[in-house]
Every structure is written in C-alpha cells, then in structure tokens.
Amino acid sequence: MAGGDDFGMAPRQHRSLARVLARLGAGSLLVFPASLAWAQAAPAPGTQPVTATTDGPADTSADTTADGAAPQPKKESKFHRMFFDEKDGKFDFSNTLAKGGFLPMPVIITEPAVDGGFGLIAQFIKLPKDSKSGITRTMVGAVKTGNGSYGYGFFRSGSLWDGEVSYKFGVGRGKINLNIYPSFLPQGIEYTNRYDYGAVGSVRLHLADRRFSFGPVFDFRQLHSKLDFQQDPDGPKLPDNFTPDFDRKLNTGALGFGVHFDSRNNALSPTEGVNIYAEGKFNAGAFGSDRDFQIYQLHGYGFHQLSPAWDVGAKLEIDAARDNYPAFFAPAINIRGVEASRYQGATVYSSEIEVTRRLSDRWSILGFAGLGFTDAGGKRTFDNSGAIFAGGGGFRYRIARKLGLDAGVDVAYGPGGAVFYLQFGHAWSFGLD
Image 1 (cartoon, rainbow, N blue to C red):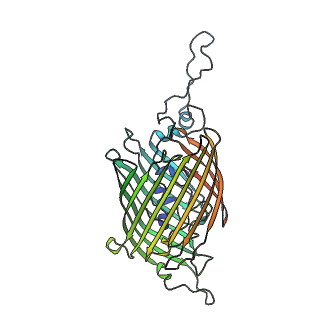
Image 2: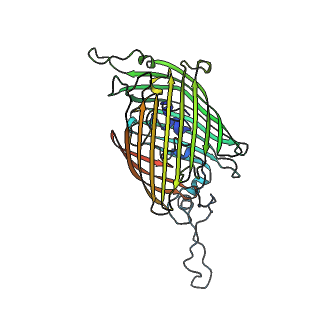
Image 3: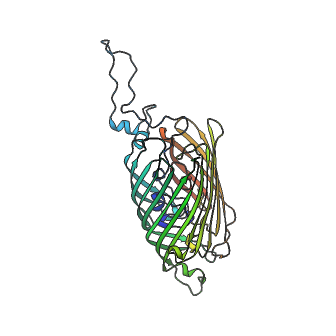
C-alpha cells in the first residue's frame, strides 16, 4: 500500500497491524517478532510439513531394559514439545506457531528515529484445513516508543473461496513524533501527527496461475499535525508552501489498484523466487480527501540459491508522491543503516543486495550493502540526496524449522553511524507481499 508516510506510525506499505502499530516512521523499524504477523507460513523447500507430533522422540539408546523388557519411550513435557524440535532437539517455535490459536507477541522497536520502543500484539490464528486456502490472522495490539509516539489498532488478513481471493485490512489510532529535513532547514524540524483514525486495506483476486494477483486498495485517515518550530527573527523563515502542511486537521481518502506477482518458495525467509508489484493510490475530494495527490510504488525482490551453502537476494523499491501531497507523506530511503525519514523526496529509490552463508542447518551469517537516493521533484521541499550508502552484517537462527523461519540480528552502518536491528523473518518483510 502507500509509500513513505508516517500513518499509524507506519511509513511504507500498511500491510498489517505490524505496519499500523510497529513501523512508526518512514524507514525500516524493526520488530520482533511482528513480521510473522502478516507473512504467509509456507514451509521452506525440503522441510517437513507442519505436522508436529504430540510426543517428543523416544529414547532409543538401548533396545531393552536390564530385565529384557522393551524400554518405555521418554516422555517430554508440554513445554519441551512447544519450544524444542523433535528432530534435532534444538530450540524451535515450529510446533507453537503451527498449531494456531492464540499467540501473544512482544514487539521490540530498534529504530533510532523514535528512540526505540516496545509493544504487545495479541494474534489469533486459524489454520486452513487444506493447502488451498491461506492462514487467517486477527491481531490487536499497541506500541509505545521512547520519544512519546504510540499507537494501537486491529488488523485481519485471510483468504476466501479456496484462496482465490485474499484480503487485508486494519484500523488504528496513534501519535507519531518525527523529524523532517526540508531543504531550507537541513538540520531538521520536529513535528507531531496525531491520528484520530486510519483505515487501510486491500483485496486481491488470484488468477489461475496463483502467482499473479490484482485488486483494489484503500487508505482513509484523519490527523492533526503540529510543527515544533520557534521562529527566530534572524533565522530561516518557513516557506509559504511548507506551513500549510502543519498546525491543522487533515482528512485523506484514497482508492487505488495494485498488480502483483509472487513466486517465492517461502514467504517468511525466502531463498528462491521473486516478488514484484506495482500499486497506485489516488487521494481525491471524491473520496473524502482535503487534498488531491497520488502515491505510487514499484517494488521488486529476488532470491536465488547459488549453492547449498550460499544464498543471494536483491531488492529495488521505487516510491513516489505527486501533486499536492503533504510533506510528511513524501517517501523516504528505506535501507538498513539509514534513519527513518532522514532522506525524503518526490521520488525515492532504495536498493540492497544481501549474501547469506549457511554454517549449519540452524545457523547462518550474512552481509548486505544498500544504495539509495532521492529526487526532490517540482515542489523542492527537500534537496536531492545524492547517493546514500549503507551496509553491514548479521546472523540468523532457524527458529522454526518446519516453517523455514529465521530470526536474528543485523548491525548496519550508514551516514548517521551504526544502527542495530532485530529481525524475525526476512529483513525486507515489510515490503514483501
């Protein structure tokens, strides 16, 4: 859905409660483990289907007991079965996640633009009776950050008619405190957007080839903005085309359309396939918007296994805002190591490449590098950023073997120094379908 703004605390695609509540900015807020909240739980190639046994593996170290009787299988506690894998005995969430039902999920936000934060999401999962239909997720949650931002809301995703139609929608309220960096004041200005409500969603029809889908999107919000700026008689003046974006109530209403292609082998931690989509949302008075403007996205992600031990992935995100868009709706560079909303423009390009080396069935290490740049466009609210580079490394642990799900830590270095990220699922999860 729409790129680059800060709704509900979510700047990029508002695909889930994780977006509505956890992203809190125009960059890549990292949430653990909220990424799972909206991803499809497709098993990785070569892994077993999600059919956890009710008992742990039997102890077969001896065929018989001292008196010749067959030994009794070693019984494991319910706790052990929930959090340890019956195949290798390692710490694992497969059986817990696969059984459905209710899952409380802590949310840890590591984005420096909001001084970190914490939250809790209650997720209710309904698993399909067959493989044709998708998982239904219903979530309610709230987050709060170190700089006073907060949000709470509801999200639901699922499918209808044996997976022929999929849907997502969410509603929420909140407040976001961020800095904006216009060309006339590059050191930044703090602003606050308080959302009375936000409602976002999409419906997609899947073709006979289920990799292809298309359908409408919607985005409706009401917010109150406030700019924290004390005018200095000897300092810079706020341009006339900038101040109308703040210190006012604003209603936005958008309808749009998206076309999607997805051939990933696993939606949680993919290693093969591509995910490409194009979406446009059109805010207009006919839809209840106080302003006419458009938000566009063209995103592509590719994954490939070079060998049994090496994987490579690449992404390219192009986000654009046109016409009379508020400054805080402008998209921002979204690569690891770059602070949320630090570089905004009318058109923004964000790219990354990632190489992963598997050390064992459970552990892997990775390195990544990113390049982004912005085009200020005709409004000239922002400067052209020039080339912005960032990169770093991290590790992953296969935390749910049967689902092919990884979790881990990344440390990235960019123009502002080092940034620490917790990952649950792929680092690009918030951009992927």
